[in-house]
Image (tube, rainbow, N blue to C red):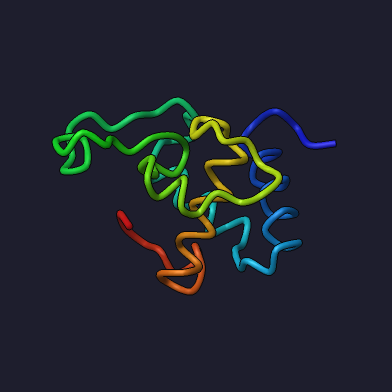
Length: 108
């Protein structure tokens, strides 16, 4: 059982990522979550270039809808605000673009 909190969401996502062969670590995910949303799964960015273009960044790891849909991981919710789905899709994207969420140290 996973806790319904940031620790539990990260651990559940890591188990899904591991089952799919997608690299990430607890520390890398938590560091990026804290920078992007301070742990608020309902965070939305209404001011950056994505928001100006009509596709604001959303959720724990501030992913945009098209990227979330493209990197959605089977077995997770299609709701971008779902913490586990947001973390898992974001990590799949980061793995594809940067090798792992662990390699992300700024907006991505």
